[in-house]
Image (cartoon, rainbow, N blue to C red; front, side, top):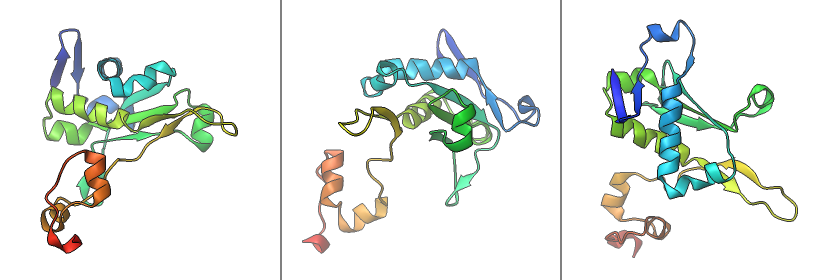
Amino acid sequence: MTIATAPRITVRVPSEDDFGGADFLPDAALDALFDDVVSSYRRLGHIEDHGIQVSVLWKRKGGKSKGSATYGKCQKPSGLLAHFCTADFVIWLGADTIAEQEWTTDQIRKLVYHEARHIGWDDGDEEHDPKAVILGHDVELFVGEVEDTGAWEHFRQALGVDFKQAGLFG
């Protein structure tokens, strides 16, 4: 499957055979897509501003988490891996799940954007040096929770959206 993101960037989702038995596969086109995404969004400017190095790879099998397919992940190398790794972060995309669902260019681009949003920058303070950090999601919730009981105040503030608050929370 070939996916064009712009006239100059074409990303081909690798097949099982392309991995040659390996679990991860680098891809120059995927790196170019990442660079394009980072340069397109102000919220990702800190990646370029601070020279944060990111390696973007295909993973042969995305796997599952809590029963749902895992399409990608952003990780900060630590321990022994950090010793051998030149990247500050590794983003991988699950080739099997993306190919199986025949994702569009926009879907892959959004996934790359989502994973890049996990990359943050801490300016440090008098006791701590500035450094790249991994960020969690702003909000975690169940849609049914909001439908049934309304959104918690901190969710409404984080999303900047005025949800209808159900009577349960007064």
